[in-house]
Image (cartoon, rainbow, N blue to C red; front, side):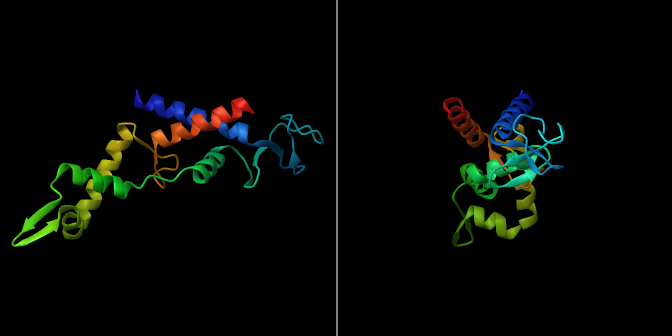
Length: 158
């Protein structure tokens, strides 16, 4: 079920990317708003995102739209919050009362990084997080859905 929802989200992002861009003929280096270049007749067109440039496909457009309109998820903060909810806020070591998250991070950074990676995978599998660039940036699904709802409503009104 989650994979289908992610694919639907990607489809919505692609549709928005096409709505936000203008077909562009690379050969003639001009807009081809009808979907075919009026000068050379080509229908093998790039996409122009005003203010961002021209490129083939829409993956780059999606990345630009997300970067311009959303803040990537802080997986580090999310994981720390998750750990804080699962364990006591402080841990007693000898006579010291120390922050549990800080102890875990500092005493075994490799295990911490591994646990964070597993948490990210879990959030991806549960459909809470999504990455569209193979893990360079993560976004909360609800943030993308909210952005899409707003952007699609703006396009419907316009």
